[in-house]
Structure formats: C-alpha cells, structure tokens
Image (cartoon, rainbow, N blue to C red):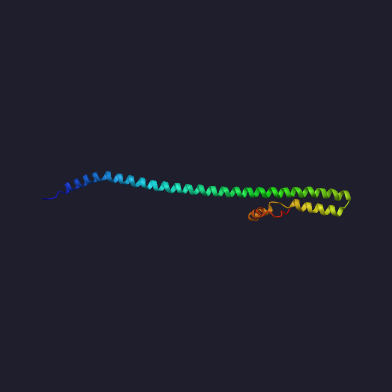
Length: 139
C-alpha cells in the first residue's frame, strides 16, 4: 500500500490542530510564570527602594537635628558674647578707657565678621562636637 503524501499532510494538519491548543496552554502558563517571577522581582526592588528611602530619610533627619542644634548653640553663644561685650563697652566708655574700648570694639567686629556657618564645611566635626558634652564652643 502506497502512502499518499496528501493524506500525510492532512494527518499532520490534524495533529497540529490537536497540538495547537496544548501549545497555546503551555505558552499561557509560561507567560504567567514569567509574570509571577517579574512581579516578585519588582516587589523586591520596591521594598529595597523603600528601605533605602527610609534609611536616607532617617539620616537626613539626624543631620538636620545636628545642624539645628549646632546653629542654636552657636547663635546662643554669639548672643551671650555680644550682650557681655556691650556691657564691657559701656563700662569702658564710662571709665573713659579708650584703649579698652578700642580693643573691645575690634574683638566685637572680628566676631561679627566671622560666621558660625564656616565650621559646617566639616559636618563630621560638628557631629563629633555635638556628641562631646565637654566640647567648648568657640565664637
């Protein structure tokens, strides 16, 4: 019996029709599995980003608190210095001590020209100074 090429082609088409739905289901399952993997990876990335954000926000808050504390102390000390300097200036003027008056005014000018922000260039230094209870704040 001779095999008819046409009947073989028909049988192949029929076989493909039977296999096509199975392949389609396989493709859907494969795509869904890939989707689940990607979803999990992206969720992990979001969690890592959230953790990074929270860590950095906490660090920013710590630095902000340190900066505010530094500025409060620096300006409080400057305020105290200027109050005391004006008292001494008044005393020197009342005594007529021009040499002492000139020295006080010169020192006051130097303090006024200096900026409490100059030390902020080295924030690590500021943080260490804030942590040290015995640190003497110079103005």
